[in-house]
Length: 349
Ligand SMILES: *Cc1c(COP(=O)(O)O)cnc(C)c1O
Image 1: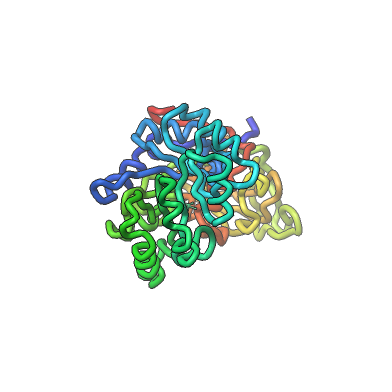
Image 2: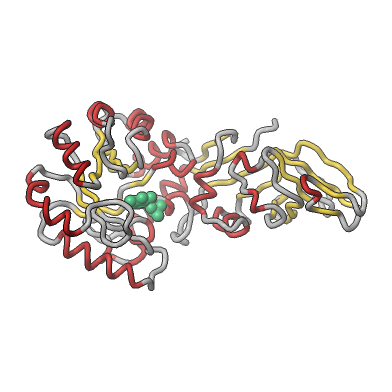
């Protein structure tokens, strides 16, 4: 089989959700962010595992992502749309019972006009300057909008993965100033915000990356492992070059394994010459450039070359790999492409 295998541990995802839920202040509900196909891991299987673990509220980025999610969850669990109510979304929002988080006066107007009486939430900007109503806009419309009965008011922290960053406290203060006394459930924290402590938790937390084994949730269980099959082995002589651009030249006779997988599968080209594969517990250096579908690895030191080498596993997690490629765990996970055979492990599988 020339397809690389991505194994996703649904029990680890469920355990990570429970772990983050236990970190939350008493009375705080823990939602689950499953945008971008559950960070690349497959929204249907992941969301069902999270629902079994106890999650009742889910967040996606755009209304279209609600289609597969509603199909997986059935009626009941809330599906909130972070991007809000975009032009042309009314029918999807209505038929799938999605809850848009309205981000602007335009979105509020659109929602109240096209779907009066349909549930919604509000996103406020407290300093990230990306999405949501700013303080002056909010003050101008708050009375009217609160009268329409929002289900949630939320904001998002820009620097929650840096606990000492002064913006965290500034955003907390601004969120209080904008929402104290509104009488609507409130949400400020994603994974990083949960770890900042209970004053950031309010009524609902929205973890994403921490469910999938990524930092900053260092206490989380690893979720993914990735194995790339060896397609061909070849001996190269000292002085021979390997791959595009002759980027690697063997200093001594070497045994090179060519693996199935490349940058089209989310294995960043910036990993060229920097990453390590594993044969069990033995490290094997990636040599030469990562190409679209293939990667070359020096396996000269192995007594026997296995059928596949591991890129993500017990010795190297998503954040380790991200560091080798100059990226972050989020980008590694969401870049994992459609060509992998996704295998699900765990009781929920
Ligand atoms: C992506 C996102 C989350 C989840 O963030 P993590 O850092 O992955 O926990 C929560 N809220 C909003 C608004 C987001 O965009």
